[in-house]
Amino acid sequence: MFIIGTVICSLSTLICWAMTALRSHPADSSIISLAAVELYLVVYSIYAGIRQATGASITGEAWEFWGYILTALLLPVGVFVWAIVDKTRWSNLVMSFVGLVVFVMVYRLEEIWWGSAL
Figure 1 (tube, helix red, strand yellow):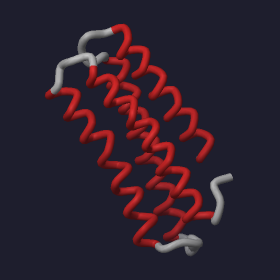
Figure 2: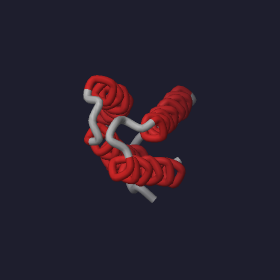
Figure 3: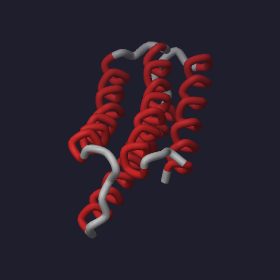
């Protein structure tokens, strides 16, 4: 799951950077890449919930793990609202940071879950 997340977050960041240079308003491709990150996080959280429901444990604290997931799930939604309100080129740049931040959060989730990210 970590490798898939890395690819999705990287592509989202690159798309948003490109649209920052090319567009003077929020680009549909940036918003779609943001939705792809959110979809990945939904699938990740469902997978984590099923895994824990079947008895598998995590190496870290459960509250920290689920706190990271909840925060990561809210981040793309908040930035989407930002992009709708701020109709400038810079909303694409703000959307690019979601990919970077979610990558770091998923890396930390993997550390909490397995004890290491890879």
